[in-house]
Image 1: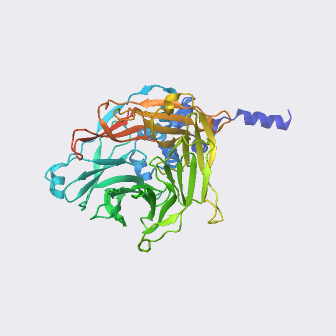
Image 2: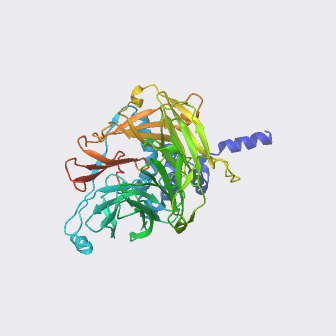
Image 3: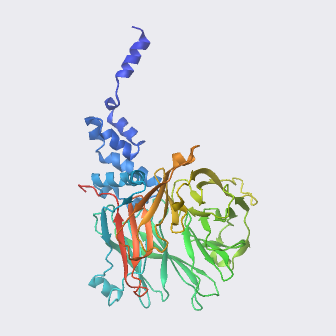
Length: 508
């Protein structure tokens, strides 16, 4: 027999399971968690290997990097094997749920209610006679940790809660902080810090008045045991007019916050502030009048304002020491781009959380959804060129007019695995707690034939509650809802519900 034929026979007799264990485990590192489960069903050897902790620690770490989840969210050494598998598979299970329940209503597997009660020891520590409840809350992007505010006469009590990694975990407070503030603060962000920092940053702000300037506060939450919350930085914006409230956004991958507000003349003002270095830049947009309907996207070197079929791009100036910035400098767009739809009857929605995935935003018209990817553009730092450009990478034809209905209010765009999720309320008056989620696979969107939208309704029983805040956390397959009684005073009668739509592991 020829030597070449003998070599071919020798190679063909080798199998994947006959490889050394370390080589098989190395291959597992390149697989999706769902593919690891598929391999488990093939033979006994692979079944045993896919039950090793090291396999699922590696798989979960890859999922966390892909979805920009802080390492503090999932302490590997404290998690059991079933819990490691549950969290690693959660994004895939959520997108599979959206795909197979197209057009249907999905009920939660578990419902939990956050109890804001303080212990007697905590009341004594903070000098509180009774529990004043909570009036504001914010959940971090992964959905594990939640921050709340309780207001008292001369101070605000911050609390960070651990919601757990699955629906049968007990909700518990892990850190509190008393902020001496006579003004009412509102939460405006809860995001992870730089990678490997093991910290989250909590952003709050107050409304301006004749006596108090507009302020943005940052508190650091160090997640290493014991969890500790401390004051980090404060930005005061000199505004003469009262009743102005900023909206703050953290720029992905940085410690930059953008505080955006409209003045009495409808001019959009933007303060970019690095809260660690205490450097800032301020701009007043003079070539676009605020309508309240625009979508603003924030990046490390530019800001995009999308409205009425146009995308305006503003390069950011260098950040200078905070004390050197007195008033915002007037700025015009570096470039104005008309969208392919060529219509003024459109609106935009973008990603509202920091993710390592490509940055997308969507333009929605009566006939289609156009997906834009934000790409780097100005590598030579020419001030006359935009630092980034939106590239139309795909579209989805709309055939259901319900999608364009005025009763369908869209909130934001999120990416989970390879699926883009467009979220909105089912009713314009928010009387229903239902959350509509439209999902589209990126492979279909970027293909020649265009993508298809799959609608799923994440339902709950809070049909007569006034919804103050709501957010889908696809990484853990849960929805957070903050409700308030309509007849109740502004700071009382609030409740927070956690709806988990993925079944918890049996043997946690």
